[in-house]
Length: 206
Image (tube, rainbow, N blue to C red; front, side, top):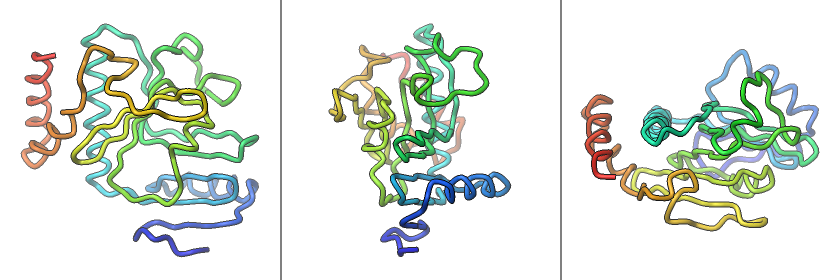
């Protein structure tokens, strides 16, 4: 074990894939951590309550936008995506199938690369990480990432092997989304009802 530069995180190096599978099996009984594994390096993160709240609120925002646009979708929430052939195992904050919904509709088990990856992944960036998630997302082939901290929402789209920043989402190309984190930050202390009400008022302007 090596000490993570970020308090609260655990960083393990030279972890064989077989050991990762054992950790995953045992962890099912406990939960409470987010996992990322990249070619032998394993990072375990315990997200803060604020992290979880931002995730839930932004996930709800995305669902409301999809409903408003009459776009069908499947939200799989926090989910572990694995590619044993690439030695990648990554737990995302939330993920959606939208453009590729028909490829996985009604499936109870979705695995890569037999199925397409989720179209949109949400990353709440309130907890410092050692492993580069963006590199892993790219190798998994995820087309779009929304990376949200307390002040900004950054959208990245996969072009070739690299992610490029984009001012608009592939899912909502006509909507400017950069104000979403500020809506959460300005109202979160007043409770979820206040956040939802402010978001609904913002929807009237888009």
